[in-house]
Image: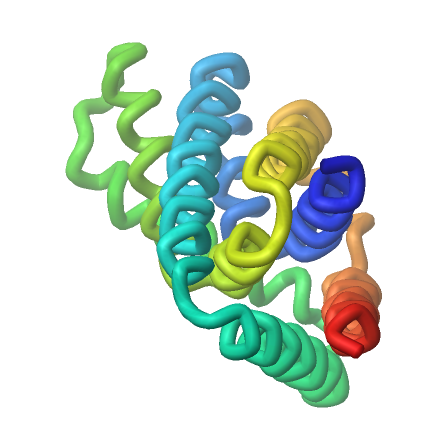
Length: 205
């Protein structure tokens, strides 16, 4: 259980820092109640984590040889893809992420009233986060971890990792966001995926 918890916590925390979901939380927290934004964001991430774990558990019913090598291929693929992305990232990668996140938030808030209620803020934070996370690499990573690890460990580790990132985004705001190097974080995330892939491959032997 401790191994599953540690893998979920590390993988999610280092993969989520500085991505679009992170900056969406930053922008929302600058415009609305930080408490409401944090609740909406973390609830969406927790729901996404639980859904991913359930999918992983369903996949665990397959022959373990397929589950094992599927996880290995997934981790190596994500790791190589992230390192390739780093090599092609512009120096202002963080600014690009901020601009994309701002555009997403502005598009939604144009349709809301000028004085949003607590419920609309919660729904906005939840929906924007959930949609941004759908199909994200961390979702597939959680599925892969849940398919061959302790369910409780993966779930609690992943949710805690998401919560840490959401807290940093909501409390630190743009100041911390601008100090996070997208290239460095992505490189660390890619290396971590490769490491987990190597560990999974070794465990198979």
